[in-house]
Structure formats: structure tokens, C-alpha cells
Image (cartoon, rainbow, N blue to C red):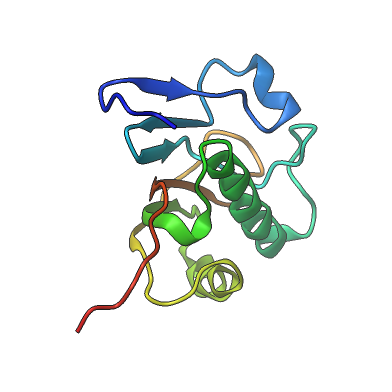
Length: 138
């Protein structure tokens, strides 16, 4: 466990394709983890088939894998930024999100923006707290 809050901890990527990427999949500073933008890529680095729904599901799986390398998971996500080129897919995104996250929801920003990789239908970056769990306080 990291004890130095100024140390920037980077671990080996959980995806074989990411070994040659020139960025980290997740970075931990103290008990906070910041992920890179993740998309619907399989372990070989190819976009999964099945359209928006399957890419969204794979994106959540990839974020979870990246968080787990630092001792966190989707339940500890405090903030997400979601990029969806076709804003018509936002309603579908909310349905898929319910498969991976539960109330109370993390803070979230959704943006209708083009993505760098052709065929990529969604990209999400997340911030998580190691050992954290979202709770609703009245």
C-alpha cells in the first residue's frame, strides 16, 4: 500500500496491448486512482463487436481491471467522465451503467465528442478512492 501521498504509483497494465502504449492505464496518488480513458477494447487491443452496448460493457470491464491493479474496483469510483460521439446512445449507456454501478451514483460528466480511434463508440475515464464505497447520507 502506498503511504507517501506524493508518490505517483504506476503498475503494469492489465491488458497485453497496453504494454506498448505510451501512457499508463491507471495512476495512484495516495488513496486516489485516476484512470486513462478506456474504451471497448479486448485483450488484443481490438474493438469488440456488438455495437455500442458491447463496447460500453467492455469499457466498464476494462476500467474495473485497471482499478484492481491498484486495489480498487467499480464500487469505489467517485467520478467518471463519459465521452459518447453519438449522443443518442446516452440512454443506452445509462442502461449498461446499471449493470456495473449501483446507487448512489458517482459524480459524472457526459460529453458528446468525437473519439480518436475509428469505430470507437464510447470512452470513459474514472477517479476512484482505494477502500472507498459510495454511501447515501441524509
